[in-house]
Image (cartoon, rainbow, N blue to C red; front, side):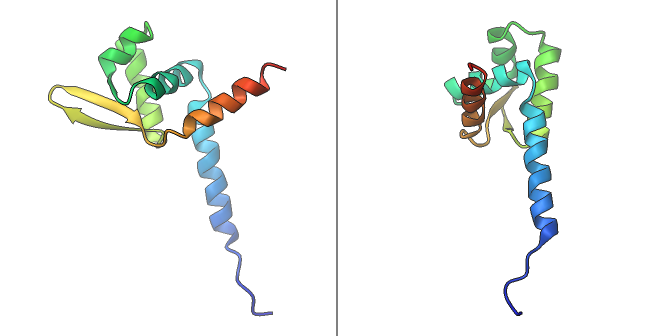
Length: 103
């Protein structure tokens, strides 16, 4: 049989990336950050920690995890580091989980 070959490793890598993102968002503070960024296109660390009533170091820690896993992107605007969602569709995962948890 000379059909298309299946790259099993590519499938496993895709699943590992998905699991990594799910692990990254699986924390109440990180979910709150994602929901906040859904409402605002971009925010600075200061705006995030103030709006969520977090210590700045705590906000920075969680922002770093989300950025490292590709959930957020950041860029410098003068003195501020601004964060935004890489893919706004990520909020659909949270919406689905909220619906599932109301059973």
